[in-house]
Length: 309
Image 1 (cartoon, rainbow, N blue to C red):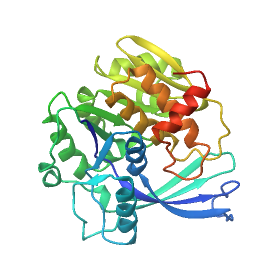
Image 2 (tube, rainbow, N blue to C red):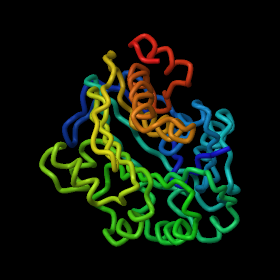
Image 3 (cartoon, one colour):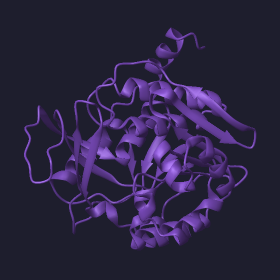
């Protein structure tokens, strides 16, 4: 059975909702504040809830945040390959969601920012596994280089996904160039696609994105409420989104990615997998919090209500 092997970072989110961000030097009162496991946890939880066993290959720290991260992963049935890192706690992200549903992140990296060749040496990889690589992992040279060397030694049957993230422009271009030839799936939002291709519009970015990726690589670009675009050797296709009342966009992209990978691993063709991912993201934005991805049954119901079978 295929699994999702996640090489990114599980951190803790301090999620706060407020009307609008204050100006620099200002102050604002939040309507709510709560701690949640976040970061890479969101993608794994989404995949796990949709039938794809998830395995966390990253580090998790010694301390209150590490404890919260492990409790959340245990509750979802996510496996961990590494013991507790005794030298650091797990990192923290302050996630601020405004009344418009826009979110702003401020992160402090902890134990999850490191990963060594020794950490990866004993990971058992199966031929049908799906490997997830986050752009955040490529920001730390001490983690990026051993990770890339390990990936390049994997069997070609292992499907490699890259999610560039919002700090794409901070990644060393040489590290990106080393990873791109190995990709089977590139998934990001419109802003990330524009940044990755230096294109002025999404229409221009789609062919430019395909040109930068291997011919066998599927590219998926999330376009908010409009759904997403998929691009592969068969051309480009728009997959429509679902009309819902958005209250919190935090974690929607992660829900989309986790469900997309789970659907592809289950054998769904790319358009159907993207449709399921769109449904997952639509449900996720109607809920507050980062890890709000629905299970397969909820996705099936939304698809059925909209005439999809």
